[in-house]
Image (cartoon, rainbow, N blue to C red; front, side, top):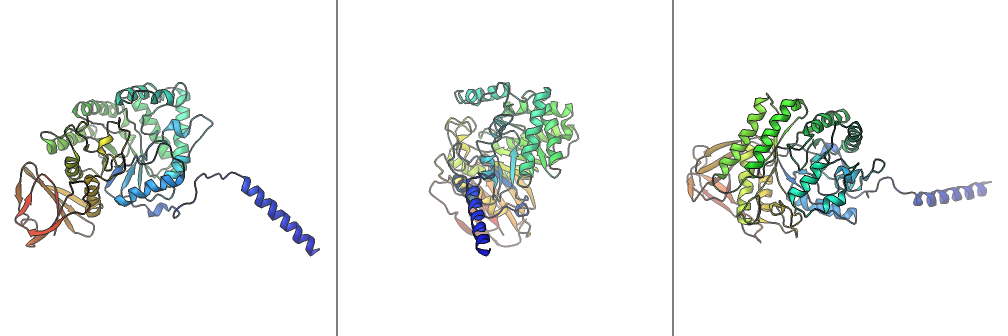
Amino acid sequence: MNFKFLLSLILIISLFFILGCSVENDDPISPIGPEFSPESVDYSIRFGVGAHIYPRDYNSVTEVYAATKEVDELGYVFLRHPGAGIAWYEVQPTRDTWNFEKLDAVLKDNKHPWLFPVYGMVGNVYPFGGFSKTEMESNDGSKEDVISYITEHTTDMSDPQVKEDAEIFVKTLVDRYKDHIKYWEIGGNEGLPAPEKFGIISNTYPWIKETDPDAQVLITANCGDGDWAFYDNINALDDILAQGATESFDIANFHYYGYITGEFEERLEERYDEFVAVLDKHNINKPIWVTETGTCADADSEISPGADEFRQAQDVLKRLSIYSAKGAEKVFWYSYGGHSPNDLFYGCGLVDKLGNKRPAYYNYKLMVDKVGFYDTVQKLQGDNIWLFKYVNPDNSEIYVAWAKSGTDTLDLSNYVSENEVTVTYIIEDSGVTVHDIAVVNVDSIDLTESPIIVEV
């Protein structure tokens, strides 16, 4: 009797093992790394990057984890959109087909806080009824052609079928990742002037909040590659808010690059103030995030013509400090990784297309290390000497300063009681990985157009 029971048990276990090995795992992602815990995410970090680091065609989850590890070396930062493979038409190729493999791989065990575009970063395209990924990617690669195509296929919420499909997609997406993602962006590269933008914002916002009441939603960014694009978007923002979108977002979203010539610092401040003026016009008092800003390292870039790695290295501290002091709750550098060589923003990466760290990488990391979780920041001077004071949670005071042009001498004795301070100099040359540090007199700190960090 016991022998028969034992034999039966062995057969049952063997059959279970065989069948179990033949069943496909519902979760396509291997359990690599520590288990994710939502409580481990610290959303108070002030700075972020447009990640764009994950490969379009990846062969294994290991590749995704390797890319994440690269960003980990940069420090603890907010990440905004991971790269290809997250658009609506990629996540839901057909009404009955879902592909979460790429997103699962990106988010599983990733400890960084995320800002995620709901419909992807290639506009709010409707994936059914005429849209073709092949047709879109067959364009010559210019930004204008791609935007024209995705605008033509923008989600139209006035169509009942389209609206029903969009609601299913948004609620499915948010529900799946609500433990990993608390910040969602209703936006895309076609910007605010795109058709049906009001309908997209006003419908998507309640779907997100219904699925995850704790989620925070950003309105489509007021984009500004240059001033001409900025003012087009300012007018579109004004119109959308006038239509009633004031209650359809929790955080205002601002982009501005601007040319690096002329009154560069003042221009960044002026465009920010003009953005705030539109919000004030509609009695909106909400946090503001600058989710894209950057200087390209390529001289022929349309974004920063005449720039190079030297200028890009300087502008990291300038852009982060100016926007933070203006009142931006978070500031994102765009971007971390390299894109296609034909991409307009390719040269703005902290690393180049081969993955080599540019001088700007080390200066961004320096800011994250020194003031990544600051409590307050204020601009103290802004003529030829630009001076900013950060106060960290431990009450330590950090100063960022530079001369707008030429050289100058900074006297910090009105702000600091000590006779000497420690100065950290930014990295501007390729191949250098360690910042120079010096102790100098508090009343005679030499300044150039290259920002420095001063610690008491």
